[in-house]
Amino acid sequence: MTSNALMNTYGTRAATLEKGEGAWLWDANGNKYLDALSGIAVCGLGHSHPAVAKAVSEQAATLTHCSNFFSIPNQEQLAEKLCNASGMENVFFGNSGAEANEAAIKIARLHGHKKGIKLPTVLVMDNAFHGRTLATLTASGSRKVQAGFEPLIRGFVRSPFDNIEALETIADNNAEICAVLVEPIQGEGGVRVASDNYLQQLRALCDAKGWLLMLDEVQTGNGRTGKYFCYQHSGILPDVVTTSKGLGNGVPIGACLAQGEAAQLMQPGNHGSTFGGNPLACAAALATITSIENGGLMQRASHIGDRIMDGLRAELEGVEQVVAIRGKGCMIGVELNRPCKSLFAAAMAKGLIINVTADSVVRLLPPLIMSDSEADQVVAILAPLIKHFAAD
Ligand SMILES: Cc1ncc(COP(=O)(O)O)c(C=O)c1O
Image 1 (cartoon, protein in one colour):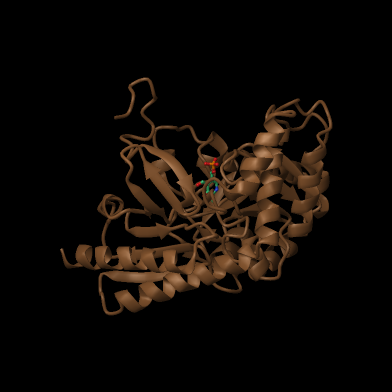
Image 2: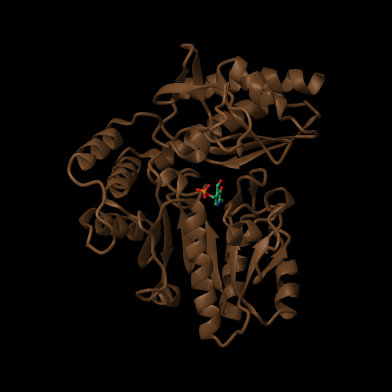
């Protein structure tokens, strides 16, 4: 039952979840579920992680919030930790992925104006997802996300994803572009992994054109793909990187990180947030990042992801309705040749939580702490469901 007192943005909810521990969740009826979604790439450390629970409860009992009028020692510590993990120079903290991207888009516009561009324009991709605020839904490449919210805002042009030639053509015909905003792996868009050298080519194009390279790592960040940030697989450094989701393991926090000229553009009064980077959220994020680094969880993410993908490939070999099995680390997509939303309920009924995105892609975002035997259980439950669906 979903209360009428809630605005109907999510439709009917699947179950009432009451408790979580590690990779497991329990509903109000006592049913147990293996969680291969992590609250949409949020709880990378699993549920009720002791280090995060301890840090949050101690901080809540000391100082929850004080505003950014005052210096916040654990906010500074977290910023330094994130800079060390990323190669960036400084950080702005907000509360969500969309807010982190808003900060990035504002940095891009400051950069454009500094270059004398009258209508600074950000290049974004087909099938992208960057959030639900007006700027970020405009940047998103999905009519579903935008429909009904026109007028969209100015200052964006769109290109096909993972196609550097198309970008070069657009670049030749638009002198107002000042930045590119792109997900290293498109998550909501269907777990689309770009070619190996895509980010290097983008870096070279941005350097040649004087554009900022801005990576949306809201979903791919915080160890999920096997490195702290996904761009670290490519050996490049972006100018701006945004993250959120897995940063606080469930406590809302978002971050926009920058280096070089991009790190110097924001000045006092340009941007802000009441809650962004408050002591409570920073305590959660510090405990999360420390646990990811000290627990070897980036390596674990690669191992678990490979184990699940290998298992699914072995089980689903020859199933012609399976178009592709792809991903990196704990971000996995199984694309089918037709819409497969019904697999979500079928998996719930078997005690497994998954997601279906872009209509026909089963998306798995398991916690990085998942054990080998839990990963095998994901495959053992999911593969027969997909085979059964394919045979229908
Ligand atoms: C790549 C990406 N960017 C931005 C967002 C928006 O994040 P939030 O829902 O925290 O605003 C999401 C959420 O799914 C995302 O996957």
